[in-house]
Length: 241
Image 1 (cartoon, one colour):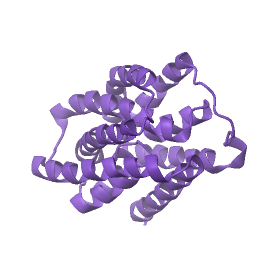
Image 2 (spheres, rainbow, N blue to C red):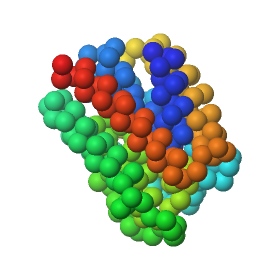
Image 3 (tube, one colour):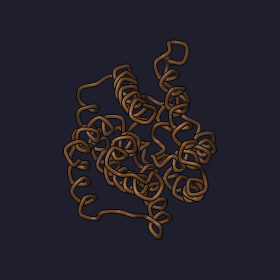
């Protein structure tokens, strides 16, 4: 599990996500309860890995710290609403929403119609307004805001690598408050969580550094699409077979 999380964290760190989005289907291969085992574990891993991804992007200057901290505060404040909804929603519906959301965003990330050639300043008010439903919805699915916030920031005009780095700050705050809300009912193996977190933070830091130094904006889009498409397909086969 630790090795698997480390590999997933490397690719997630390339996008500033934190590993939660990819960890949900991966951890569900080993843990039975989606809401009380998989989600709190993935959220904890997501926060830890996002922190190191932010450090990796920050070293290369790809974090808008002013906007990032504001997004973090808003995401952290509203994420408990998503946990509350998750604990009262049928797991089958949660998985269905997960697959629909990821499919739609994969399409938006790679379709030429939505790829903006120019980069402009992001309006903070619009980004802060949009992060509210994004944080609630993503927390309900047990994942970080990144899979929605990164493409949203890109579509608002932010350069892809800066969007990935800035988003990582929001994921850290969202994960912290969501995990605290999950904690009273969470069923977590602390030893497993500690070992997987260690592999995850190493993978996420070097993933962020790799993107900062080696990849262009278009390549970041395609890494996201390929990674999530493969993981989603694999989980769908296991879930619906």
